[in-house]
Length: 391
Picture 1 (cartoon, helix red, strand yellow):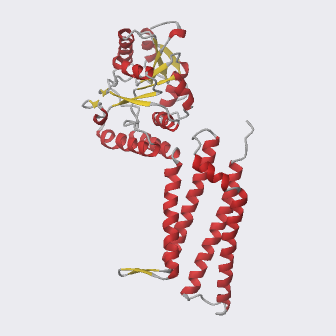
Picture 2 (spheres, rainbow, N blue to C red; picture 1 turned 180 degrees about the horizontal axis):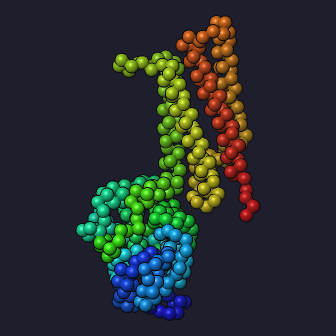
Picture 3 (cartoon, one colour; picture 1 turned 45 degrees about the vertical axis):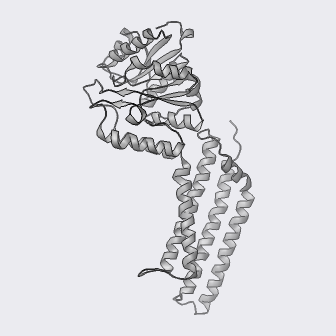
């Protein structure tokens, strides 16, 4: 390794929590790659509170130890990355499941101008998982499903979202502004790189069975949920907009269809009760679409998500005044229909409204009124979110 930090090109960062059994092998493999390819490099062990002597092993093998107090995989990596002096950073777990001696391919891709280089452990990307290296539920369910969702949500070609061996430039990782502290740190990196339109490459690698005698830190279901939750939070279009559009469209279509006359399919007839359910469906759909706008405006203003030109044009047209006016029209229309129903009710001496016509008038009246109220107050809330901030 080169002791002159000004000349360091590559920083190897290894998150560590009680990895005494495997840490030395990982450092030696990284040193082998450094020597073989004549890299100006450093090795950083980001220790997250080890109690098994991992820190001493790291120092004895020539690595720099960075002590990270905040617990979590993401926290350890963030601490190590912040301390890295290299232009390029290679990160990988210290459990000997990745071959550090074969990391030059990652450096070569970064030199070609890529911002993020992901390892791919699966055959479809040219990789390989050795026997016993990955639990079956991760191999056929967890990783493929979450990676598919990530590709669908964020329009990226990355095949293995959760590979622990990856490399990136110091400049790119700074632009990502990563914030998560747990295992979802891996997903956040790919998501933010994709949203920022960074250049991403994949390198096929081999995943080996780790060398630890203890269970891994990964908690399959809890960490899987944290990954999924993160993907959903950064994809408000999939979480709110698309379901909202479907519910709103279907709800209002069948609401107006049934309001004209009962709909009979086979032996089943849909009328008053179905109309009420469809009205509720449409209102839920509208509420989800409102949530999408709320989240989008907030996330863009806070720097979580990039600007969306379509949303920007919509918001430039849908001002507070337009929202009040359109919501007011719905509200007045609903009140008018309700008043008409009230007249019909008075004609029967304010008794029970047994007439299907009477009930069918009340349902759209209430629906229009609720929709009007939602539009008006949603417009106010959007205006508050759009207020300039004094930072």
